[in-house]
Amino acid sequence: MRMLEERIRKDGKIRGNDVLKVDSFLNHQVDPVLIDELAKEFYRLFKDENVDKILTIEASGIAVAVMAAKYFARPLVFAKKSRTVNISGDVYSSKAFSFTHKTENTVLVSKEYINKGERILLIDDFLANGCALRALRDIVIQAGAVPVGAGIVIEKAFQTGGEELRKEGLRIESLARIRSMSEENGIEFC
Ligand code: 5GP
Image 1 (cartoon, rainbow, N blue to C red):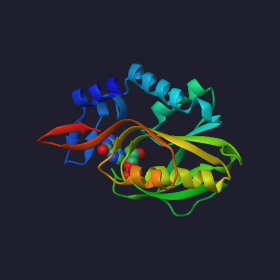
Image 2 (cartoon, protein in one colour):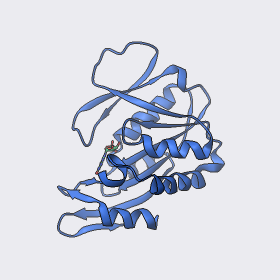
Image 3 (cartoon, rainbow, N blue to C red):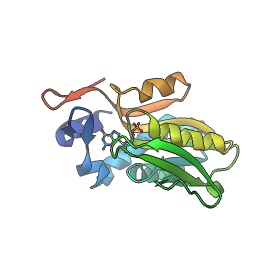
Image 4 (cartoon, helix red, strand yellow):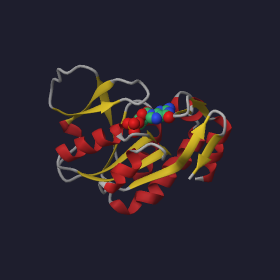
C-alpha cells in the first residue's frame, strides 16, 4: 500500500537492522486517518470471508483491529498477555515469544469470546518470526473456530514467519512488506 510505504519511509526509525519503530503513527501515537485507510484495505481484502470476529493481541494491534472491526461490523477480541503460568478461569491459552521484549508471554482469550465454528480474522501490526500470529491461530483452533486469514500492517519479509505460515496454509495479507532494511541503506520494500 503506497500510502503506508511512504509513511514508513518518512517516519519509521530503524533500530539495529531488524526492528522498525513506528511510534509516531502506529505504536505509541496513533494517526487515525492512516489507520482508517489500513482498516478499509483489510475490509476490501477479506470482505468475502464471512468474518464473524476479529482477533488481535494487546497492545499495539488493537488500534488498527478496532477500526477494521468497525468496517466488518463485527466484534474485536484482543488476546491478553500474561507472564504467569498459573492461568485461572475458563481461557484458551498459548505461548508466544515476544520479538520486541525478548520474553515468553502466555497469550490468553476467555472461552466466552470465541465460539466453535466462528470465522476469525487475525490482525496484527507486525509480522516477524510469526510467534504472535501462531499463538493467535492456535487459540482459534483450540476453540474449534476457523482462522480465515491474517491482516498484517507491516511484514518484515526478511524474517521467516510469513513464509512459514503461508506454507502451512494461512492466508496472510500484508499492507507493507519489507524486503530488507538497515541503518545505512534504509528500507527496501518487496
Ligand atoms: P513475531 O511474533 O512475528 O516474531 O513478531 C510480531 C510481534 O512483535 C508483533 O505483535 C509486534 O508487536 C512485535 N514486533 C515484531 N517486530 C517488530 C518491529 O520491527 N517493530 C515493532 N514496533 N514491533 C515489532
